[in-house]
Each structure stands twice: as C-alpha cells, then as structure tokens.
Amino acid sequence: MKILLVNKVFLIHNMYSYIESYCKDYLCDCDHVDYSISISMSDILYEKEKSRKEDIKEGISIREFSDAYLETLAVYRKICRCLLDENVLLFHGSVVSVDGIGYLFTAKSGTGKSTHTRYWREYFKDRAIMINDDKPLLEIKEDRVNVYGTPWDGKHRLSTNMCVPLKAICILNRGQDNNVLRISVQDAYSMLIQQVNRPVGDALAMSKTLELVDRLCSCVEFYSMHCKMDIDAARVAYEGMK
Image (cartoon, rainbow, N blue to C red; front, side):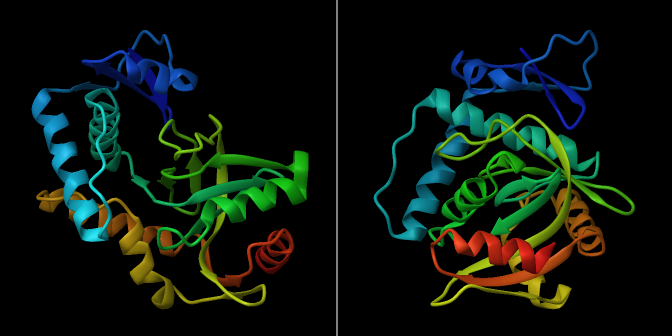
C-alpha cells in the first residue's frame, strides 16, 4: 500500500491488513515513491518489548497488543526516521486549528490534553478542526512550522488529513483557575525534549532531532497554562495565545 504524509509517498510492505484500514484516510495511488518501508517480525517484537518496558516504568499492568496493531507502531517509527531527513519531527501532543491556525497542547500523560482540545471544538464549533490528538508531524521550515494530521491520532482516532501553520505550543497543567502565560524557550525546552520523538541507538538521528528542536524554538511561541477542565479554559487559552 502507499500512504501520503507531509507530501511524501511511502510504499509500505506490510505483513497485516489492519494497517490499511488504520491509514485509510491517507492512502494514495501516486505513481512515484519517495520512501519504501518493509516490516519484519523483529520490528514487531521490538515494539512489543518497548511497550512492556514502558508499562513497567509507569507502574501499570502490562498491556497486550496484537501483532497487527504493533505493526502500525513499527511502520510509524520507520516513517519518522525517514522524515527527519525532510526536517520533520514527530511530537506528542494534541493539535487543534481555529480559523486555519494550529495550537499544540502538550503535557504529561493524564493531564487532559484531549479533554482540553475537545472544549476548543465545543466552544469554537465550525471554526475549529482537530488536526491530531496524539502524534502529529511538525515540518520545520526556515521561518515557520507546519503541522500535519496523521493516522496515529490517539485512542479516540481524532485527526484530519490536512496541514496548517503552527502558531504556538502550550504546556498544560491542572489548576484551580484558568490562566495562560507566555514563557521563554528555556522554560519550555525540557518539555520539548521529553515530548519529541527521540531515536534510540542512532546518534546521527538524535543529532538531527536536536537540531530541529532548536529550529522549532525560533519559529513558534511557547505558553504555559494552568486550567480547570471546563469549556471556559478554551476561551482563556485562545485569547491568551492569539
């Protein structure tokens, strides 16, 4: 199968058919191919072991995933490695667009990123579009960042196959009141490094990742928000960042 991401065509030599339905909104029939990706059982076993270690680290019961689902993770991992050469980063967060401008919310797991962006969609209605609820792709240009929807969009499967310019990255925290504050790159940097995809055991890829993070820092604004889980948080966030 072929999928189109960030204007690049990926030919996927998959083992299971599940990924074809998983990526159905991104399938293409282009004649050319930019990258070819093959998946083996060793790739799937790597994802299984990685998931097991993460569950142990988080102190939760070890989750069991099908090989077909694990293949989707293996495919995305290889896609993201290819896209580093195109100045594209995988970033963990929830991205919503209002009037064609993207806002990315990131936080520690369980803080409420998806709930917060749901309030944006409820508050702004047709003006708001969900770009990606989990693993968007950031294309780092000389003077701007474009954010793309992808099929890897969280447990609620919320994404749109489109691209918008990214205005800001906001670090969410739970709070008693709704308030948003612009912060410096230095204050945001540690969270950025935590939330960007970090290639393991690949020094060249890690060096490229850090270079792109530095370029990202010069192209978007950074904010910190303490918020309640209510719809007024969407208004406060937008007015504070727009």
